Length: 110
Length: 114
Image 1 (cartoon, rainbow over the protein chains, first blue to last red):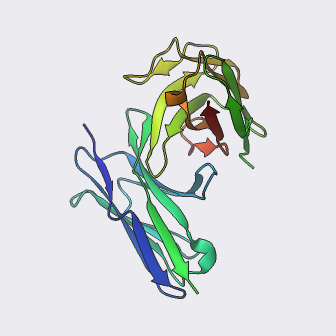
Image 2: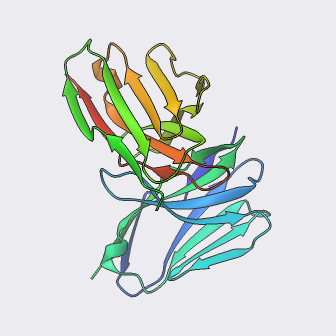
């Protein structure tokens, strides 16, 4: 079965630096992969979707890469701000459903 | 756009009672709605997928008689936890999707069974 691993449970960085979060999967490559943001006690909010034939996707300060050879997606937040502090989830398409990683809790310190 | 409303946001009830959670897509018609469960510091676990007008498809290990799902319209799905027990206490989240667009999530329902 497909396993989804997000590199670390928690990541602390200084304001202004670039945060890099990793999502690895173990089995087949999905048709697309998504990244979501989740704040405590709230539902996830969709951020970006990247398809298997796309290497990179950008949206404002966010950048996502997708390497089907490495079975890995990287999620970058440039010029990070304390307001970016949240849990970030990667999700993989699986038989028309989505499977979520456990998330990485990012804390951006001023 | 793409707002999903989930109600109630928080419920506490006694063991043995049934609890109904509503999920509404406010500004779009959802061909598919999903129900997830999330324990603290854990991933969202898909419970079931429902398409309007048809029976829900449950994930392995999810009791369909305990977690009743109704998807009567393109904007409303309900999850009823029947005869709830303390082990059913969790954070339940719904999402709605149209076509192959990304899922849009509600803000979840925190269920506490005493």
